[in-house]
Length: 198
Image 1: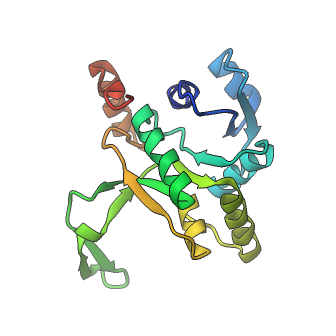
Image 2 (image 1 turned 120 degrees about the horizontal axis):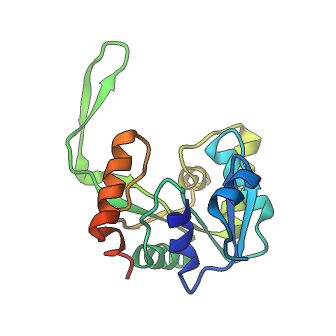
């Protein structure tokens, strides 16, 4: 989380930062003294509920970036691209090309249903950027419809609003398994984690 926070606090265009965590007191003790721009709030039982909690604590701003703390290697170039994409289109997500062939399964049979054209696919990353009013409207609509989306961009897509894709970065990994910890440590040791920071 410290690495994720640092990427944004080091960026000249970032103002207030709200981090949704399971226990703000525990997170504060683990992080130690943090920049006064950072406010820790109690997150929800889902990712979407945590984002809503953070939105509730965020002051009036024009653009909002939503980022997963599990992605500690977002850098200046990536953040710049997301901000610019959100300014121009209202919403923007970083995406990287899918390197492998993707097959959709027929779940009931455990067999391949179809092979997806990977040139039409990207792997979505964070930070995702939005006009503040658009993101708040998307969350309000999802709450009314009891929709739980995999990311904030999907909630905006539901409104029929465009979401731009900007170039992501392969080192912007998401730590979700023990193997990912090893990869993240290797990236840090090699110094590559800062290579795309700009």
